[in-house]
Length: 452
Image (cartoon, rainbow, N blue to C red; front, side, top):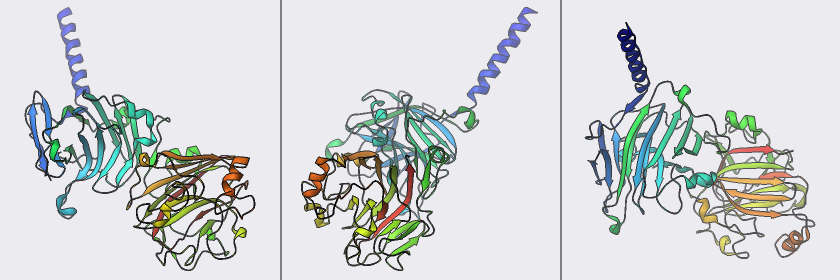
């Protein structure tokens, strides 16, 4: 009788363990590359001691080892180890289509970064939008990766929510709907002539596609969420008090800086983008600047913007449209938007105070390179105003901070182009402005969180 009971218990335990194990599917059998295929480049992948080893090769583009199967919603876990100086990643919800750049692999990439930048676990959109979650947005995560050691990676892709981890530390959190499914792939990055033979390895690659809600990691409010679905608010953003300043479809809430209505020319709304039409590159000489109908005092403002070659524009705040009824732009503090490499204004002013992200003609940006600005795709400007303290952020990196309404501020203004404007920058509240400087610039996902 006792033997029967013990045997029954063992069977139940075995079935219980088996039921738990069936939640996970191994993507790599530890022996060969069955169910995987190589794409795009000629770098080598081989199986060695139960691991997949990728070996860099100069003269070839990024090389990918992709699953033959597509996956939509899942939790993926893996271990990885990379040689110093090499860059790599794990693609997910990715594709290789003949009609897209002749089969080039494109889609989300979990970054594996051995450089001092330390962005392992960030999310890069391969061959599409480039960086979509830089770890400038989450500095503590930059310490999670261990150089020249085995690291544990985790990706949760459930619906529009995508989150990543390195060694148990949450790194990225995005909301996006561009790719609902695709293959998973291991990357050997393109390298230079002197970087042949460097290795990156993966092991214990497994995926869970069932009971995802039960296995989802609880939300970590300390990790910033980036909502990439244009002109929308996520549930978290709504809970935190964010509002859309532009609905993505109409001119509601906006007007000309010098007239009561919206400009009849110079601005277009196309596919969820608010665009300045290229004219002659002159300040507010075509459609003219647009401003919010409401005024704002203390707030956090986020604006996604994309510039073209040589473009000049700006985001202004504390704007009083009555201060300048003549030619030129309305007056206010400005987050400069500029193609520093191709526009002459970058070389004017004092010590770079007219460059991208600067408080225009007053304070230059610092650590601007760490913000990883990318021309030709969208970048995120953020302006934080709390009383007299103001900050400029670019792509999750603070690049300017200052305090106004004091002697130092007034002295700074006295040596700028704003010296003839009484009490410049000291308004308690004002409109928010998007500038028409005669160059093609696009805006979207304009959001504000009022702080009082």
